[in-house]
Image (cartoon, rainbow, N blue to C red; front, side):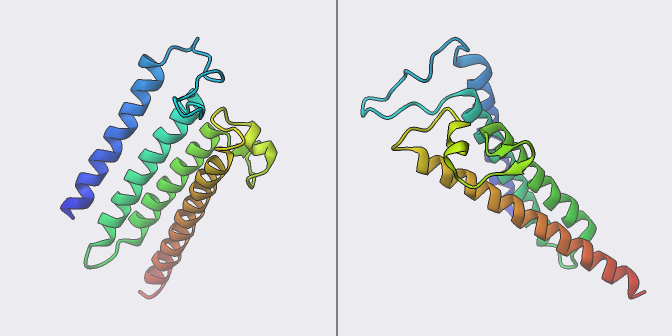
Length: 160
């Protein structure tokens, strides 16, 4: 339990650092399209990428809170459902910030998706798609967990 609590704090700290970088350190006028690392890869510090990572860190913190809540001897299904849906919503926000959602519809790693985010090129586009797919799967997982706990809560309620 201590490790999960520490992880929540560290995920929130990481999110805060990413938000600080996005709003205070990287100037909006910086042309990130032209910025490259010493090895020739493009920088991935665009506001969209930093926002996506920020919300992904917040979502991961929520996942740790969910895991901590599951440690109770008798599960509190309503509480677990609310925590799980909160994690799913944070993952969805990360997708929106990173361009992984288009008009409310998840898109599946197509060239159209890759054009929506600034931190890809022919070499790193597959990495971007991998992260988007991971975040999509985590959102769906936590939506399923929320649904499971809502069903369990209804089942418990009807048994009385």
